[in-house]
Every structure is written in C-alpha cells, then in structure tokens.
Image (cartoon, rainbow, N blue to C red; front, side, top):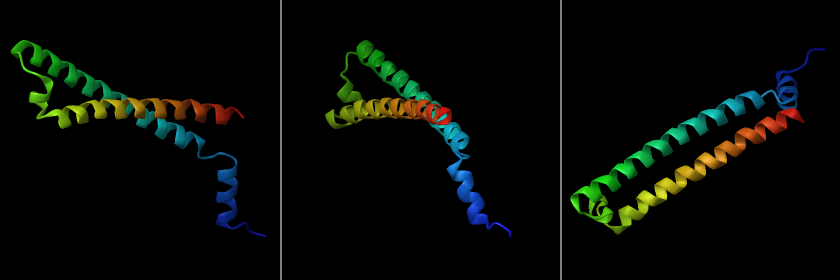
Length: 98
C-alpha cells in the first residue's frame, strides 16, 4: 500500500518539520526590523542635531505636526515589530524543546 503525498505532508507538519523554517524566518524579520529601527533612530537623532544647530523646530523640518507625529509613530511601530519578532524567536525555540 502506497501512502499518498497528503499523508506524508500531514505527518511532516505534525512532527514539526516547519519549525526550523519558521525560526529562520523569525530571525530574518527580527534582524531586518532591528536594522530599520537603528537607521530610523539615527535619522531622528540627526534631525534633532540639525534642528538644534539651525534654531528650527522638528515640526517645521518634518512639514508639520502631523508628520512629526508620524515620525514618532514609525519609531514606535518599528520598536513593537522588534519586540514581537524577538518574542517569536524565543517562543519557537521553546516549542522545539517540547
């Protein structure tokens, strides 16, 4: 009796064959989000230096209060993405042990 492909895929998924792929993907997402956060923080820091040296305000440089709020929101969302993707890496590691 020959097993169908559906049975072998089902056994592969139930045994956790995708765990390593999910973990690698989580690590890649974490690294990309971390690099994006670091670049955004560096740009925001440089904005602060520029504003201080030329006597301007951040909302003038960003184009208004709304865009300054969007700049802060971008930093917050990137931080949340880093935290969630970091948690998913360790959760995948714990699921592999059990």
